Length: 575
Ligand code: C2E
Ligand code: MG
Ligand code: MG
Image (cartoon, rainbow, N blue to C red):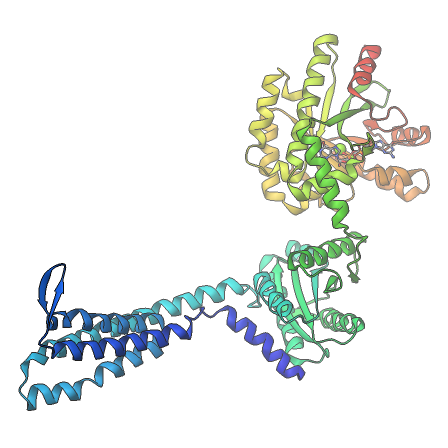
């Protein structure tokens, strides 16, 4: 097959998506046969002088003529309904063909018994004409809706659904293809600095350029360009000979993207990350191929800014490992085996400020699984809410008991994932647990990672406001890793910044890291926030943090995460 022919086939698949499913031709033939049978029957019995006995009652056979002709009418109406144009004109011809015969019978032979048949035919013509034009309108509307379902509104490119249909088609033909997930780098900064309208224009320009490249067939492969969501695009590459051809095609799209874009007199230079998976080598299940290409894209993005292309490898995203962890989380939740350890937080004079509750889980052999491994899986599978709630409940119960026993003035920090934070019943759950344990909201601090401020700012802001109204404290966790802007920080009603461990690690190694930490502390103080450094491991780091004005410390240097019994002893010993 030539490349042009293959490309036409891609177009055909797309067109097919926006077309209605047709009624099988066999039904058409069946209706025609039934119609001719009814005509034969009508003629036969209308001239019959016989008597038919039904249920013991004798009837003149010709009195059944109406029923036989009704059968023919129903066939014609079905033809017009099910086969639209072809059905309508076939029915029309069959009806009109009867007129000359009727003319001869009525006008020439003066056989007026044929008059009802004439009116019947005229009425059926009227009925099928109504059906035909009604159908036409509905069909146009349906086609419009279907087209919308497979098209991305902003760029006019096919959407993700269209992609999966095309993949299905290729899979049926057992043709090799690669699915490529693409994410434009730093697109958010265009939206933030130039506004969403300009962002939209940039996306449209990318779509036009890539569509033209796909149509030109200059890449040497058959390519299908689609927009997934936001600044994410999808490519399906088929018609290649070797796996190197895929990389070559991706390189073509990459270099086309990296050429200057001029929009409203401004120049933009774009780059993107590409992650791809190949059928059948990586998987023969469409859902998996989507997941793999998305996962590998995510992995390339994690490596930092810049343009990158990566192919899926099982190490990147091992389904088996993923499923195994998911199974362990489910069984731990069901068997109540999720628990928490508490890590102390201190002020700079080594006075206990409180604890951070950290989720812990053991596998069947009693071995610890790190939250760094199971929290991301729990987030993807929607189980994180249940983990968060378990930890929250245990932490609140612990602090309630400890304060009752010792009267200590301490706080409890709890991590909450974005997913959980955005849930509608989140605030109600928190309120319920606090009430149940008779714990004041003011000693509870919710830790939210910095990335929330960037990814879901609006809704997160609303939730944080609700938390604050309830009287809880809010801390921004892993601060410094997410590049959030100062304006965001200013608008978030938080109480505490937690400087990420990576900055603390480098602090004693180089002066610029120390200056960076000092700068975060001073920004925090300017915004009237407290600042805590996490992952502090050495006395040297404590000394530096003291000198640059940090408020609190959390780290192995003064205390590792510990079971609640030990934490409770620690509180008692400090009082
Ligand atoms: P995080 O909230 O930033 O928690 C701090 C992590 O740093 C903890 O790891 C803690 O054990 C570790 N850490 C503290 N001080 C030191 C130190 O001096 N040196 C070193 N090497 N590590 C230190 P952990 O417990 O493994 O938790 C990892 C991440 O898992 C947490 O990071 C948090 O993002 C997440 N996580 C933990 N528990 C929960 C939870 O209940 N819900 C949610 N949604 N996420 C949780
Ligand atoms: Mg935390
Ligand atoms: Mg942290």
